[in-house]
Length: 226
Image (cartoon, rainbow, N blue to C red; front, side, top):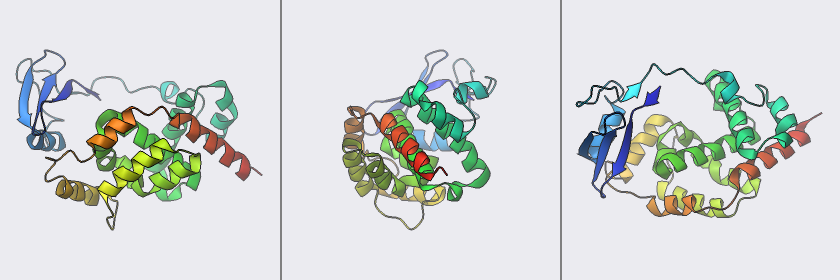
């Protein structure tokens, strides 16, 4: 599945949905756009050129693209020194994503939960900010984020994440429905950009989070090896 649209923020209340096929723009309030994405955008077409906003015909990435080092965590750890940290972490978390689908997060070891939480933060915040991190499936590990960053030796990202989580607050359950309801409430139907300062600070990070996460996971793996 490949998106054929971009979203451009105009101001605190409005944004534009832009068709990347023909360039047509559709101005809406951020609340309307959020509702559209959550409901019918997956099935909608651009009113100008007719292109689907989501293209389902594109081939899925091959296992070689998702798992360039290997399909087994032990193999990836053994070969990690021959690859950059971004590739290693991506490969490890692709394996963990499959494990989550089959067994659930409760079957993860602590090191697995920690690197999965950090990877989720990196991907989601860089793509759409902390609000997206908390809203998407990555948010299920929101409360693992601080101990994870502390365990890998982060200082700068840890400080930012502490602020982001203090804004998010405490809720009894981190299931998807509870997170969505909570976010809707504290952002007043997504009209407030609560994490803008945290997002900006995260984008300016010079800390090598991928390297910290990979080194931590390799250390943990060697300690647990018989």
